[in-house]
Image 1 (cartoon, rainbow, N blue to C red):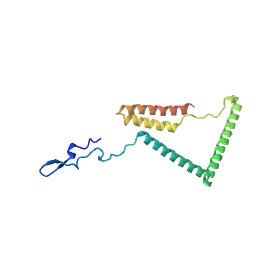
Image 2: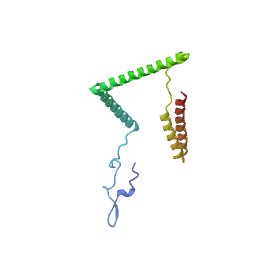
Image 3: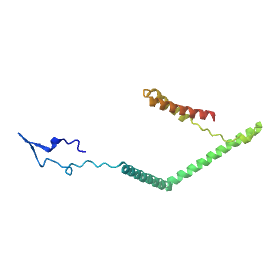
Image 4: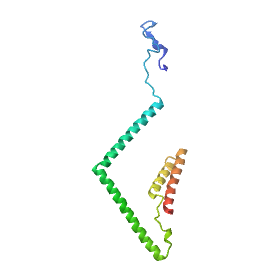
Length: 163
């Protein structure tokens, strides 16, 4: 605790003699107070409380905004867009159903196909993986991370192409 105080600290140097001064000798109780170290539990509890309060404030602001005139307008607009999107998909489905019936295909297999992959995300992950592999390739953990990220990107691209 007092490692940075040397034993010479207790001595007062006079011009010609070395004497021990009683006021220069310090006891443990007179030592300068070091900064109080907080326990890790206290820190994490305070941090968690702070984050909880921030989240609560954010939720209150969001509720207040959604109750405002602009918020209500945005909600109505989003609902209308969703309805239009559903109608558009329904029209596409009906057209495809007509074509399938004209060709004599089994329409029980006809359903809206959703693509599970994403080309843009896949290409982005592929590029990031290549950067990790080639640019930071001197360190082996980055090689492994680069290979994994690039493989994930290829997986997303293949999923998109196969579905």
